[in-house]
Amino acid sequence: MTDKRHHHHSRRAEFSSKFGVIMAAAGSAVGLGNIWKFPYITGVYGGAAFLFVYLAFIAAIGVPVMLSEFIIGRGARRNPFGAFRKLAPNSLWPFAGMMGIGAAFMILSYYGVVAGWSLEYIVRSLTDGFSGKSADELAADFTTFVESPVEPVIYQLLFMFMTGLIVFAGVKNGIEKGSKIMMPLLIFIVIILGIRSITLPGAGDGLKFFFKPDFSRLTWEGVLAALGHAFFSLSLGMGTLITYGSYISADTSLPRSAVQVSGLDTLISILAGLVIFPAVFAYGIEPGSGPGLVFITLPNVFVQMPGGYVFAILFFVLLTLAALTSAISILEVVVVYFHEELKIRRKVATVLATVVTGLLGVICSLSMGINKGQTFFGLNFFDLMDWISAYLLLPLGGLLITLFVGWRLGRRLVHAEISKGGHLSPAMLTVFMALIKIIAPIAIAIVFFKGINLL
Ligand code: PFF
Image 1 (cartoon, rainbow, N blue to C red):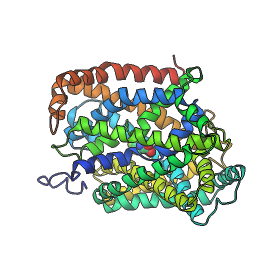
Image 2: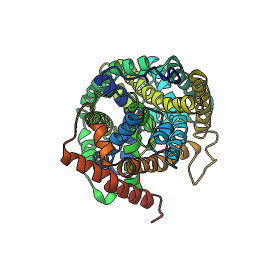
Image 3: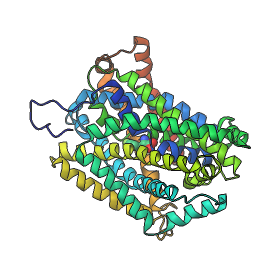
Image 4: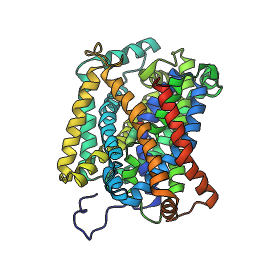
């Protein structure tokens, strides 16, 4: 979509409608983070107490950072690196954009692995691979699969190929159109599964775990995880929404878009929790059992429910598609950067970025199985990529983004940008400025240093 930028008089591509903006940005935000990661980290970090901290971070930090990214993106109409350079020439700010490019490589490498699992689970549900199996057998099946050396790698590479293909063809029609169809369908399926799950016998314990907080279970590591996940889930801190913001037309309200996208993303995470936790307790699965939670719990639900065969297929198709619309947005960050800054032809840049992230992904996949013994700071390569990107780079990127918009761009420029296509009352603008100048940066810094045990 940026193919024509070097022709001086042609306009940069834009999303075609407000609805398209919301669906594309929500397509990026809603992904494995909501349905795979959110339930399992909520399980690991103690349930409802984690949920409430997470919700507070979404409202107080996530929404302001998202609005900040949109402001930078639409204000500069460039890739993240170029946007900082345009808005703050001859400064070190563009390195915040560079950091985002690095985070994109890391996230996409392990993201593709999990999306590959989802792809394999489509095949598994098509071939009726769950029926007649006990909870223990379904758990063992998952472990055997992710630890094997060949199959998960093939599916991961297949997924990366699909991701590359869509970006290669040009994303405008792919992302915007695809998201408009897939997102409503995804919401529908999650609601149906949620109803099935909360009507299971024994579901009440799951609802209690998810909604009744026990703050004594909360740790600083959990608080950092909540912050990191708020960034990850909303696609913040690495320039994805700077990139998408650069495609938003002047008649669209940025504050309204930020609130709507964040709201939709949060809604889907809560719905995913309503699907997973009742089922977890109904089948006696350990809620803190980690990355396998969704892949083990949901097959248990499918086995028990009427029409489970069909719902299993639908669910994993949609999980894969949700992953795809997110993966495309991550790849797009790298590709547009290569294209606009390094002047590499867009298609060449796409192949390059896909191959590199695909190969990093192979390392991630193998680190679950045959390379399990090889650890860094006690983490395998897969977890390392996750940890560095989600818990270090994204919060750090978010910190720099809020400081940049708050202190470098300042109230007047911010006001000019958000007045296009909508407005924020002076009081709300003051609240926003206070959040991004002071409150969010301090909160991010405290959580960050506490979390990594430097304080
Ligand atoms: N938000 C996506 C998810 O929740 O699955 C993941 C993601 C996409 C993270 C884009 C970061 C990003 F820039």
